[in-house]
Amino acid sequence: MKDKPLSLVTGGAGFIGAHVTKELLEYGHEVIVLDDLSGGFIENVDPKATFIEGSITDYTLISNIFAKNKIDYVYHLAAYAAEGLSHFIKRFNYMNNLVGSVNLINESVKHKIKCFVFTSSIAVYGQGQLPMTENMIPQPEDPYGIAKLAVEQELKVTKEMFGLDYVIFRPHNVYGEYQNIGDKYRNVLGIFMNQLLQDKPITIFGDGNQTRAFSYIGDIVPAIARCVDIPGAYNEIFNIGAEKDYAVNELARIIMEALDLSGNIRYLPARNEVKHAYSDHSKAMKVFERESTTSLENGVKKMVNWVKKVGVRETKNFENIEIMEKLPSVWLEE
Image (cartoon, rainbow, N blue to C red; front, side):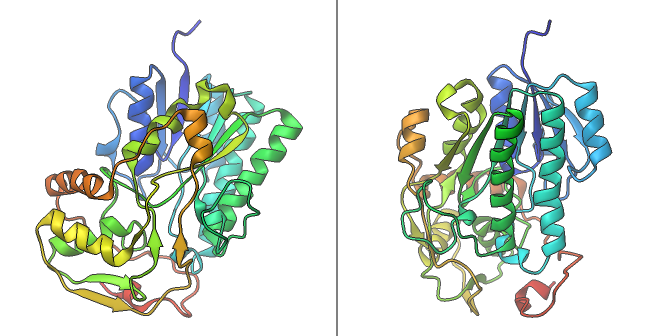
């Protein structure tokens, strides 16, 4: 009889997944990390975890992992989370973010795992009233949000049909250590920092007055990792993240101050995106007894200290754009 619960963390070499892996290990779990290293880095993986390189779209691999290991919990964080780009990579988006998720759900049902923890996104809400609350009817406006919502609905019907317990989190605009600052399609804080460190202008889509509640990684990971031991969290959906929203222009100023670098801002044509997005977290605060979150200034300072150690990341173009029409020209630049 094993002493420790065994958790499978998908995307565990990536940003949020690496943090969740470390938290689970500290919490007394054994951890298997599955990651294809398309967006993560092997150095992010805690050496105390068992690492398997591979994709959630590889159903044979997924089946073998479940067959060979008595997995108690699945923490599904693997995704390609580029909302804006998802319009132009529809097939890739649905294969990775929806079909890959279903592969994990199938095996979780067959092997009777105890709980399936899924990181969704506030992208499921779309251009709704503010603040966004869990009882709103989702109206996603991009393929990424559609895929996330589909997985949420799949977990709900799987619970009803097969009894698979789940916990769903809708984090938003998360930043911090281990983020891939070399990805020019997502993670605006990392993009700005990488550009400034290379003495390049900061690129902002639109007028920069769009607002987001940027959320420090350390504020959301404890709830995600420990939710499986909180009965009130089971079969529920939780918004999770920072309370205060900022304009992107203000974010740029805060990052330049933290890096002690002054840079030019290059304004680009506005993208098709939600103008203002922030959510209500009262449900998560009640269930997880969360306290105040890290201020943007303090969180950015923590991330900057880490970025200065790892340095500039090489930026690569996404290789398989499926639709070129209306693709922002900046995404074609080297």
